[in-house]
Amino acid sequence: MARAFIIVLTASLVSLAGGCRTFRPAGKASLPGQPRQGQPTSASASGGSATGSTGPCLVQHGFAILTFRAVRDDYGQVSVIGEIKNAGPARQGVELQAALRDAGGRVVAVGHFYPAAYRNIVPGETWPFTYSFGRQADAVGAELRIVGTFRTMDILSAASPTPR
Image (cartoon, rainbow, N blue to C red; front, side):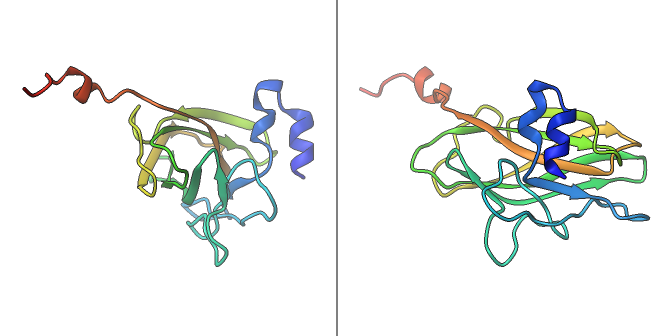
């Protein structure tokens, strides 16, 4: 089924197929789904959590998606929420990409965001994330992908005078 999505998607969205997905059952306000096995390129959620008894659903670029779920509020606004952990050896920031799909598997919204808002996350630190798509009546599924990492300069330390 994931391979069919690759054929339909544009080249810039091909990397979204597979991995971390959540799907809304009929009559439910949240969008839970099933974890995928193997080496995913994005993370999936099950019952509101991307982890099962086997650990994080996605470890990539030195980060691990610990939890991931999509929720719809009473006004039809969809948000993805979860936690990410720096599982690597370096202080770095991370960029995530979330996508919403309709019942036919078509992408209806995509958002890029930075959980630590352009800040380095220290090794071993867990950081919460949330991204709101606004009102998305057609969305029935969500996926999350780790786009990449970056390092920022500590602005406060660089601007502070050197003690004498």
